[in-house]
Length: 196
Image (cartoon, rainbow, N blue to C red):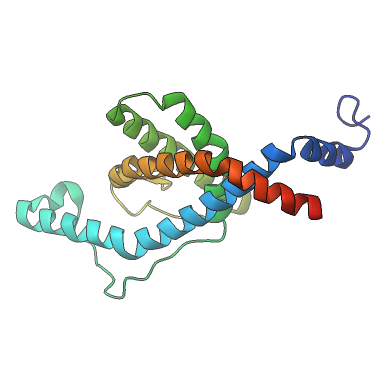
């Protein structure tokens, strides 16, 4: 007796997945979509949008003269190289498929500024937890903002708040699109599943 009457946990998991195959297929497909979306957006963000953001921030720092509060202007990579980690794929895939879709259903009818703030803080929470857990498990950091002002223990960079605010609305759009496509996805996936 391993799990409250479950003699064989692998058989239990298999039976659960087969019994709930539609939910399982949608979860896997949504997770893959969000994983690829997150990694793709991260590469675009680190290669272009963050550079543009820093260019604007650098201009403000120079024109307004606020180095005292914001620090010296950042160096901008002229090659616009993007970067990510393999570990970001499951973080985006699971974090969004499990948490963000559920949250979207709860806040769907809130006014957009409130939803944007909820997205921003939710993504910061996921970012903090993922970074903290990864650091504790491996002793390494997936990202490190500790050399920047306005970081939170090196796991969150508060200046990225506007991006997370907007990214939440992209996730809403993708979630709504997936909900529309789910019947077609299920039909195609069921045919493929039955052939296995």
